[in-house]
Image 1 (cartoon, rainbow, N blue to C red):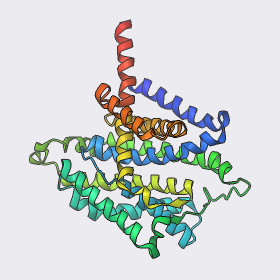
Image 2: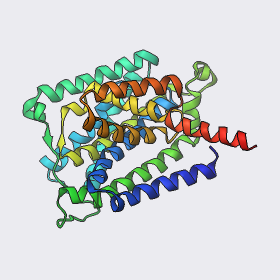
Image 3: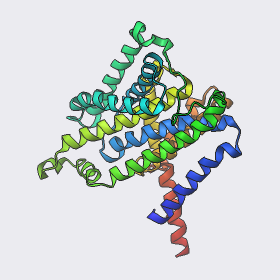
Image 4: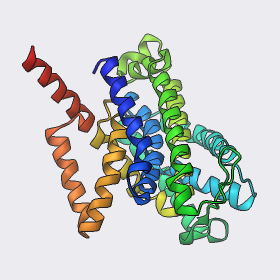
Length: 320
């Protein structure tokens, strides 16, 4: 897709999301908050997966860092500004991801995936077992915070999520996407793509350094998404870190198309709506989601975003 149609599609999508609270019930507006959180996390995940070629099976760990970091900063330390909490959890998660990444990026393929899964399960076990610190299976409360220095006390929780926090999260997603777009189209992003080739290291590319930088950036994005998810629910729960959540991130990336910059965002949007509708229809919703993923992988390996591009190219070929 060329830049002009792409920019138009992005603009239409942003306008549609901006109009959603005005046109739909507040339930659907609040339902989009998890979409914003997952979409931001997936932008970072896809920097690691789609551009660097490293598939993490423990990436939900960073969602947990964000949610639990928000719980500690706001609930225990009394910080009421969401901006301060967001910056703090992203910075602290990046610092924690640095030594973890030093171990992991030395490997590729299944070895990298298994190492990240191991670290993720270690963190899950810590959250679950150290009850006096983390609350165990009860989790930790994430209190309501100010955004942009404003309390919005006149809104109840649903009104706040479907109104001010909705637009706040939408703005965060736009900013995060703009920053990531700049990253992947910079010389750094080109080095990441080059580092996927085995012979890149022999050509002087500092492969491990670039992989580590991508790992740390993706972790910071994951923490930002986790903070939004924790804020929306009002709880940091250990299930957010469980390996199935990491699988869910992979599902979204594949569903939308990890070879496309906006594919994971499309995947997060489709997954959020599909999960909500299927849960209301049947208890076997996971089975149907699995079937959908199988169809996407077999018939449309480029995902939903790639399918849209293929349809556009086919239509252009017929009119030519």
